[in-house]
Amino acid sequence: MTTGIRKHGVHAAEPVTDGLDASVLDKVGNTPLVKLEALGRGLGSTIHIKLESENPGGSIKDRTALSMVRAAEKSGELKPGATIVESTSGNTGIGLALIGHLTGHPVVVVTGDTISEEKLAALHNYGARVILTDWNAPSESPENARAVAARITAETAGAWRPMQFDNPANPAAHYETTGPEIWEQTGGLVTHFVAGIGTGGTISGNGRFLKEQAARRPGGHVEVVGADPYGSAYSGGHPGEILVDGVGNSWPEPEWPKAFNRAIVDRFLRIPNDEVYTTVHRLLDEEGLALGPSSGLAVAAAIRVARAAAHGSVVVAIAPDAGTNYMSKAFNPVWLAEHGIRLAADTPAARE
Ligand code: PMP
Image: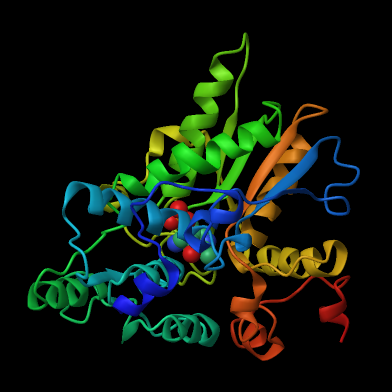
């Protein structure tokens, strides 16, 4: 793995550079903000999405992974060449695998057997060792992903576990980068922020930053809306099967991640799976954007928010990753049918 260091000349702790000196890890963040012309039409407010698929590893989790690795290198918890072990539904693992590959850290990812083929391939491409577990195994089971990750960490000399669900460097990544980018890209005009919640790092870090900025202006306020899938306990629903990758939580509130600051969320919107996946297909058909299901979730919620908000509101939604990771799921009619998902009749995919 040391070849990665020599080849790329990068170390995660090095300061960010730009221009001709910028390397791959310097290109984490600074993603585009795009206005939804078709899906936002006639709502009285505008919808803008932050295209996190533009990060080098393909998702918003590159920011989290880099932030956690930099903090651990700085504190000395992560020594040069030490192994990184994490349990993750996929994207954090991909971010860690990319960073580990470039900075000389072997990476072990413990993930669920429901992970998409495409994400699994990305993990293997970056040289990560992948261990598949039963994602629904209870916390007391030895098969539970976190238990497996803890075991491997204990057995591997010098290994470090980022623990993204509890790591303050996770929400800090968004407080320090994503939030300031949104504030600048909207010229401080953002009125609503919408995101799904997995670890809660995205909504907590962005929400706190945007609320603090808005509060500096007389009467200024940013409403933070949590978009939640059916089956998730965040929005108070009955825990059940969650069909949107990377978001939702089956556990009751005392077990919610420390990375999630519940007080930042003003309200939750629970979005039915049919609406989530119809929105994924509308984003492709009407905007030319192939995005993942958690982007469909956030945009579906943003449409509801924009329709009900005061005229001229500026609604920003997070699009965490690209649809290319889900060709075998969200864009596969067989998978959709097997999971009882019906697209609205006016999407081309539903007419086929
Ligand atoms: N969408 C996808 C595809 C993800 O992988 C994640 C991270 N689990 C999220 C949304 C939620 O982000 P966060 O963990 O910051 O709440």
